[in-house]
Image (cartoon, rainbow, N blue to C red):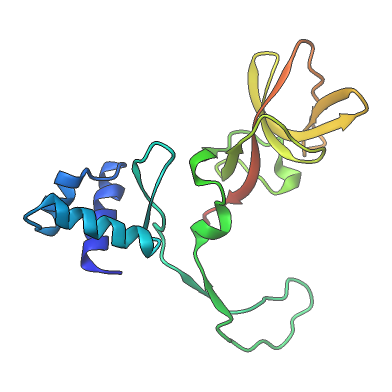
Length: 187
């Protein structure tokens, strides 16, 4: 990553927004907006930045690529050798539809048997439809929750992943807001 990229992404991390062209000009010490325009287009070509559907700059890679070394056995221990198989960007792995993706912090334990714990972050993609078995962010009878989406014939309901809780059958309405695509947990 270049010093220019570092300065732009550092601004983003600090201010929670991308800098405007005039701000980029000051950050990197350029004398003209035309030079900034060329730099931005070069960073877009390199995959560092992209533009959202409104044409605003967004960081494409906040986290650099991390080496993917191989597999680890979660069962019986086996001998393992370290081989760099590839590199992978965490962002590219988790986020496919950047404009419609967001994160939510989990509160509660109704999805614990699905491996989703209180305090985790879930990656969700805005969608109004879901398949049976998807984990969804849904509005049911005026309240929002995260559960498995279930469909049996014409009936739809939400199923928790904790045996202490009962399925939720909507009395009035059920609207899917998003489908969960990933979970992030920090130890």
